[in-house]
Image (cartoon, rainbow, N blue to C red):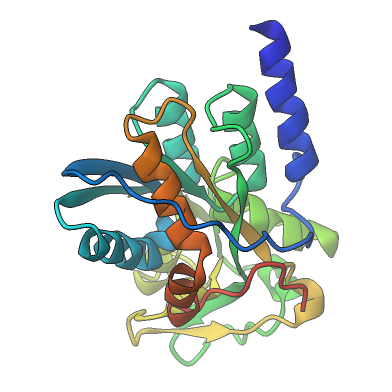
Length: 268
């Protein structure tokens, strides 16, 4: 078991950047179509909260393509999902927006061999109150004296990535408030508990009209990598492989694009 665990650690570190958000790598190869079980079945998908909308659309598409199938979608912050999986929660597929979190699952030998791969990408944006009363224009403004900053928690994918882009500019402001998800950061801004927050660009789709986005230049906005994997001890391994193939195929990638996500391998 020790050798097997170290094997998964090696695989994880070769696929994912363990200490910071992943840098661009090669796009995933076109997936081979996988037949789903030809019987009624239930598939459980754990998806990071920021991917809730496209994963919900994928779940409904899978059910349409496979009559009798039911997809149960659990959407939470990535850290919460990883903790649940490490504690033994049953699942078939996991979608995570933080490569270091996926590496933890790999190190625990929880991922199906050869399954972890890039799914899509996303970028960050600053979110401020309507009218931008504090005149926030750049990441440097997040560290201005008197500016209240909302960040994702340190254990959250959005928290890690937000701190990463700040640290690239040698900025280390203390947040006034934190949240477990990008949606939670947005809620802090909408409620007036902070002046500026760092969220994903896709978080702002359908946001209340009391907030607005401040776009970041690409030079300061490394794309966040989302990855997908079947679970090693999936209750429905064939269905897990079929859902993964659907997400990576043309129909699945179209769903992510329609919800504002970026193609695999996006660099600029």
